[in-house]
Length: 77
Image 1 (spheres, helix red, strand yellow):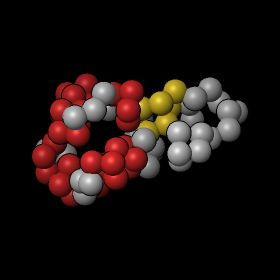
Image 2 (cartoon, one colour):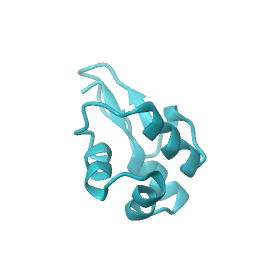
Image 3 (tube, one colour):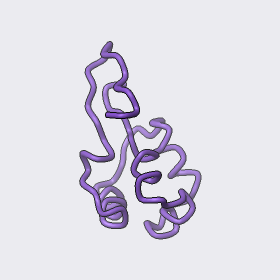
Image 4 (tube, one colour):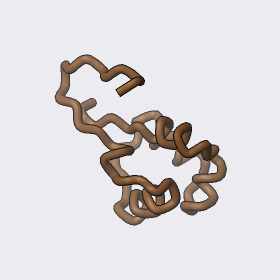
């Protein structure tokens, strides 16, 4: 997949639990899990906006474009 979701990284950096984020944004824990694992086929801009506002980050902190075939970036990047 060319779009990588780094939501788990931002949650760890902000020391926020998935449950806390789901409640604050108004989505189910299951839908947040689908998003975190990269299995989501889409995300509403309103949801992305709410996530970014709560985590005080930019969309680029959460979503990354990586052309197919590129090796994954290391966790330290």
